[in-house]
Length: 181
Image (cartoon, rainbow, N blue to C red; front, side):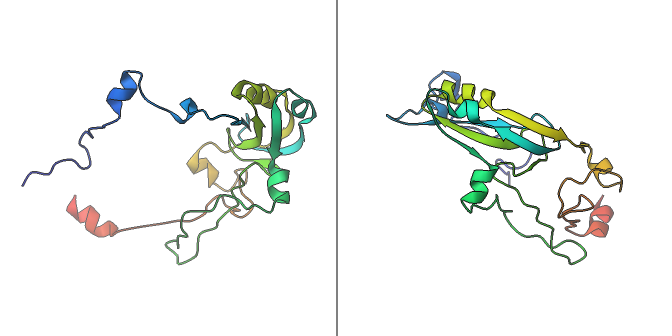
C-alpha cells in the first residue's frame, strides 16, 4: 500500500497559481464604502513597564476615528486572549495561565506586543497617527533564551509564573521510544 501525502511529503496547494500571477485577493485588497482601517502600535522593546501613553496628538489628527489602549479594553470589561485548552503538567498540576491582554495593560512582554489600536478613515492616516503616539516604557531585563529563562536568575516575564514555567509537559512513553531506536 502506498501512502499519498502525509508528514515529509510536498503538499499541492490550490491557491499558489493565482497568487503567483497577481490575481490573489488578500484581506487588505478588500474595500467597502465607509470602512475604517486599523494599525497597531507595537512594542519595540522585549520587556518593559508602560509608564505612559500619550495619544493626544494622534487623536487630533485628520481622519482618526478612535484610539484604543489597554485602559480602554479594561474599562470595557473585556478580558484577555484565553488559552485554547488547559493542560495538566506531568506532576498533575494545572498549568499556570498568565493573562494575555488584547492590548498591553501596563507591561510589555515581547517585541511586537500590541500597545494601541489606531482606527482611522484610511490606512495611511492610521499609520501616521500610530507614529504620533508617544510612549514612555521603562525597559526591564529581557529573557530571550528558553534555558536562561528557567535558570532562577532570569527576569520574571509573567507574575503568575514566578519561575517562567507555565507547565512541564510530557507525552508518550519515553522508554518505548528509546527502545524503538
